[in-house]
Image (cartoon, rainbow, N blue to C red; front, side, top):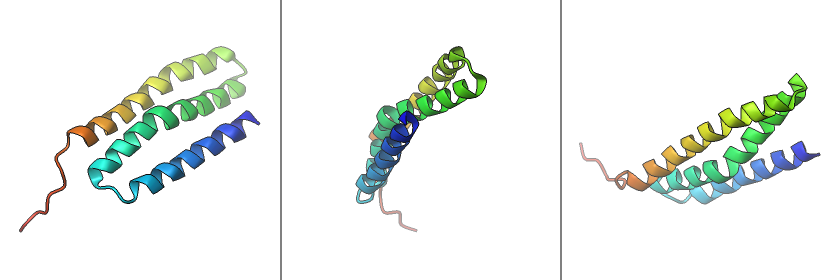
Length: 96
């Protein structure tokens, strides 16, 4: 049951982030997706994958190891997206 709840929250948050970023510029989309990745996708995705792997291996330490690998890596991906959104220049019209 907890897998269904976590998957549902993850799916709803992805749809919400997609809807929020629809009307923004490229810079705004990077910021929205960076925050969503860091605070929603990162914990839920890493928990789902690590618990699934722990059930497969039948070991709690496997979950701890997977969380130790997945959580920081996906958090860094979200942080990079956020920093790209903050520090990139505004979209300019390019002339040929």
